[in-house]
Amino acid sequence: MGDRVSRLVHVALVCGAVAGCSACDAPPEGATSIDSGDVDSASGGSGTGSTASGATGGAGAAVSGGTGGGTGGSTADGGGWQPNPADWKTPAWNPTGCNYLQAIDAKQALPPMPWVECDNGVSGCIYLDTSLVPGRASVVGSKVAHVSEVTTVNGPTQFTLLFFLATYDHAAVILDLKGPIAAWRAPDSLTGCALGEARFGQTPGASLRPFHKLSGGGIASQVVYGSVESMLSGQPAWLDFDNGPAAFASIMEVHFSKDLMAFLTLAPKALYTWDYAGEPKAIPKPAGVSEDVTPIVSGKELLFTREFKGLAVRHDGGSVELLHSKPGVWVTGLQSDYVDLTWEELDQNGILEAWTSPFATSAAAFKPRKIRVVDGIQNTLVASAMGEGWWVYRKDEVTLRAVRISDGYWVDAPPPKGMGFQQPIDVVDGEIWSILRPTPNVVSANNSIVRVPIASLGTPKP
Image 1 (cartoon, rainbow, N blue to C red):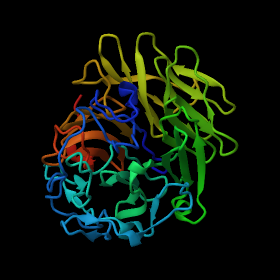
Image 2: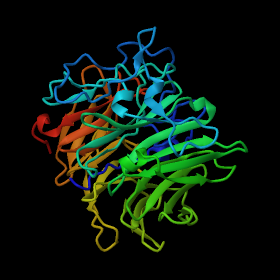
Image 3: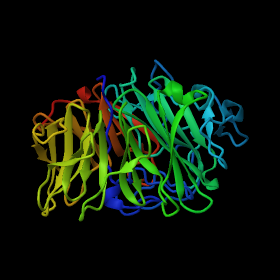
Image 4: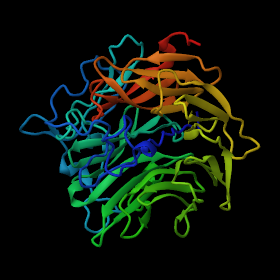
């Protein structure tokens, strides 16, 4: 699909934490700590110990047709892969006092990461073998953050991952199915200079969100944006954003078109828009609204969730229209592939339902319809993704349920052998994409990404 871009559930609503989430089973979107490096903290707290061999996958058979990873770096005395300083340079947007790095050749700068078979009985299921990625020594098996996106809007399928090259060394990477094509690093986030994930937009291009501590307090953020080629050039475009000394959270969840950029801040909680001129502007919140989340940019308009009020749209010119609201029902988790909209509705009896509408930015075109009650879930929201006529949610640690939007019929997908699911990401070219756990019950670590062909999961059931 030419305009394919994923939309993730903003699960920070449930957790409401800046430095990670220890109270819920899905990690908070964009919740990062530049002190602890807990970019992928999830429920159950952080694990302890050192990254062990075998903590990630890699036992399956390698798949031909591309490595899926890099070729560079070096082997340290202890036998582990390490980045080679000669493969990295300082980017043009590097702020004073920081030491961000940009890969000269991303494939050369990162370790090999082949696609390997899942060994789970599902034909065509493959995942990225990240066993050579050093990971975080503080959390066994933690190789990647939980945030990722997949797109075909830039041409061939591309996806993003945030890798942990060490506990405090984070690399935001854009890859295609053959390997890395762009990479940036915050080699030591303990210095106060950290890096969030790369993201895609409605229109071609990408974005990157570095953020750093200010000497007087607070955190300043940047958004580097444009085509991948321009982001790697000597003259990239970027936005500098300083929300003042009282701000203690970075920009997160950047979305954009050629006409508009939108992003969230967590402390203070706000949703900003920027038309690439002047300063970004926060969308005013009426009384009783705690936050605006799940932004979806469509040209000059912006769809979003107005917490505990419903689904809304900010029109070109700034007026906000409420599209969908139900008294006594929590309406949230808005996502879209620009063909359909999906969201979740949790009522006061704890019943969770999946809903949809054709993509719309006006109340007249918005046509809500229930897909089905979400099976196996009570009194909570779910980690979910959508695309190509499917809504996918994590039913449990070893089951992703793909629900057909048209009729509510479903199929279940298992993880690679020995692993578990963390966060479904997207459906692209008939495949479910999801972030993985190294083992089913380890909720504080993510180790890879998997692709599961829906056609290999059998006949959908009612």
